Image (cartoon, rainbow, N blue to C red; front, side, top):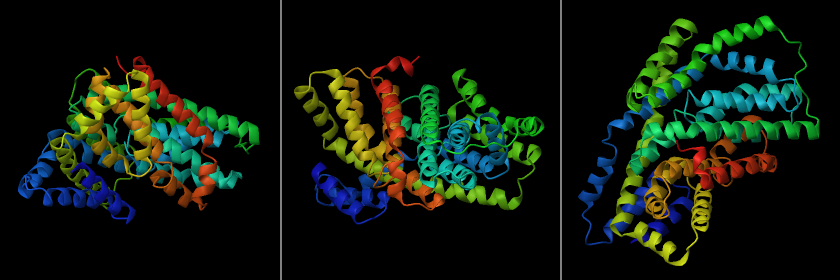
Length: 419
């Protein structure tokens, strides 16, 4: 059964059928050819997966990001960061990395970050004379920091699949996200210094800096509040998601005064559509996961690895390689839902904490977002910069190096994420 699921899914994926539909086709094909699995039971498994209270956090966090990022916050934030670091080597690119990190505490979506930050910064980079391909590469990689800094939609999905603590995953994702930010900024500085990229030489206007900092501070406070509320048990992740939406709405309406009925409607529609896509993937992946578990494929894989590989670091290396490979072809939410049931027994067998597995998986699959052939942020930023994807990929070398270094740290030094 597991082989049939894999074959049908690969054929559908190669035929460019959307991932959720390809997963459903594979599940239906497996169930239809088995006399042991009633179709109504398969449907029950699909529906049961989305009858979860914590899932309510996903649309609310998405709505929070839409309310914040659709207004004037972006321009103010870029103004602050440009004044701080725009005049250093690679400074304009470092502004993109820091902007993505700060927006990570608002949106929780790498795709939303790449679209919003890219549309703001790429035209500015071009005016400075920056190579468009390098701008696209920087923002494609930096956007993935979003899915580690709380709130993170992929970490919520992993927590629900692995029955892990959302709060623990949010807290564990902060340090790897900050390390990626620092590493990517260092890469930007090194490339900017080596290739003598142009810098922003506009005289510092401290009055404008203070104005931008004061203007953006209410929004920058949001990720801090999320971590504090979760860390000290003041509210559950779902309650934090609702509170963050209320906070975003009040800030947009009272402080920024840019929340009209049209923008509110657009934010709700965008969040609803995005949530629908995620839930469809969750339902389809739930069917696949249940069928694979019924066929005892995860247990068989874990047993095979344990019987043939007796060194813990090699087991972790094999897990990483498989995640990297899958992330190159399958979108991140679907990959998490498919891989978690497979790797969770294997991780437990080598003594790996589920929280460490979750962070390791998200860092792994994040690399797939800016790696061909199905790199979502790679395609978005390349389109915004109006360059070929191949040109952007050639500029990604330093960012891959940083990402793999952080991945090794997360995989083999659990003390960096577990408290």
